[in-house]
Structure formats: C-alpha cells, structure tokens
Image 1: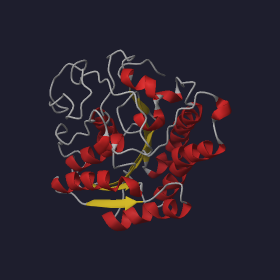
Image 2 (image 1 turned 135 degrees about the vertical axis):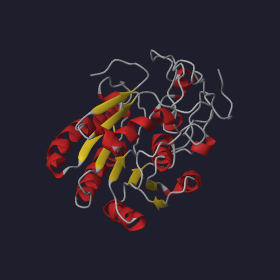
Image 3 (image 1 turned 30 degrees about the vertical axis):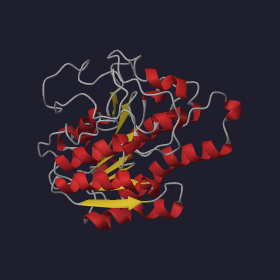
Length: 307
C-alpha cells in the first residue's frame, strides 16, 4: 500500500504482459477533502497519466484531437496517449488548472506533436461556443473530439442538493457535450470520431451522486442516438465508462472524505484504476481499427459487472 506522493508503482508500459491485479498497488489516500477543482500535481498519491508508461505505435498518425478536461486525470492520460500515437492535441481546461495544463503541453510537444492550450470554463456560453473553432484554428483541422470534462460532487441527501450544483453538473457534463458535438459535426470529415466519457454510475448510481449519475446515463443515451445520426456521414460516436479511477475529481468532493482511503477496493481487481489504464480505450475508439464500432460504451472498471 502507499499514500505518499511518489510516482505510483507500475513501471511497465501498456503493451507489456502483466498481472492486472498487481500492475498498480491498491492505494490508500488520506481521508481529506481538497478544494475544487484540484490539481493533478497536488494529488496524493500521484496518479499515473502515462508519461512514463504509455508507449505509442503510430495508430493516430497525423490526426488532430480536442480533449476537454485535458489537463489532468483521464483527459490528460488520453491527450498523452494520442500524442504518443502521432496526433496533434488541443486541451480545454479551467484557467486555475494552468500549471497542470502546461505539464501536459510539455509532454505532447516532447512527443513531437503540436499542443494547443485552450483555457476557459464550460459554464461560460461564449467559451463553449468558440471552443471547436479555436481547436480547428490552432491545430489546422479536427477529426477527434473527446468530451471528457465533468463535475462530480457527492451530496448525502437530496435535500442538500442545491440548484447551483444541479445546474453546474448538467451544464458541464451533458449540455456542453451536446453543444460541442453539434459544433464539431459541422467540421469533422468522414473517418472522424467523437468519444464521450460516461461512467459506471450510469448503470449503478451511488445514492450520494444522483445528479452526476443522471448526467452519465444521459451521456450513454446521447451517444447511441448521435451515433445513429452521424453514421451516414462517416463520423463514429462512442463512449468510455470508467469505474473508480484515481483523479483529482475524487478528493475534491467527488467522494466523501471518509470513503477515500478505500477508494476502488470494492472492484474485482481490488484496486482503483489509474488514468493511463483508460487511454487505450480512447485510442481504440479514435483509431481506424474501430471502423465498425458505433454507439458503443466500453466499460473500463476493474471487473464490475455492467450492461
């Protein structure tokens, strides 16, 4: 077990044969709540974003991707993997997360790819309305959209669930996703991909995450409907449903503080997942290998049964 701030155990890349139970330790983070939105650089223990463990094979050579929430967690791991696979990447993130974003930009550029930083808030209609165009201008085109940014805040009783939280959760998690997908559909060429981040919460909602879980169920439905609509244009739409993954979302209110030390231990693998373990799912759905996969939700959750 570990609760320090060192790089997590698990030095093998994703292509090395290994035991998934022991690839990473079952972390025991401190029982504390940190202020939103949280920085990956301040996460204890550190999460593995793939900087030292993801090996690319050229599967996205020449592609151009926009990843929301690309500064930390799953979004950062996806951005790193895309760059290692040969894609240029634009990342959208909150301005207060600038230091994390600069780290991801550095890693993308070290992979020899173009990185575009697009700070802003998805609660801001003006920012959201211009985000796809900013990515196109910065990258010189766009053929992958990853709708990953999300808000998750545990509330024990619906009586304490504020209008403000409901509005923010739905605006960021599903409304912005629909708007960005709508804008992207006007510029994405045939062969492009839209990938949405949903959650195990869409299937087995926790009682203290009812607003968050509701948006994730909506994302599943949105993904299947949009996939059918855009299929004739050659644009594939799919989703990835993470289970318990160690990201800044969790200690900043995504989980009750007293649940943090046991986070992920309930899975069949007995541990939380690391962000880099999600990246191959996004790479697969973005790559031509998945040309006949549309409206699918890939569950990456440590073995928890799901539809």
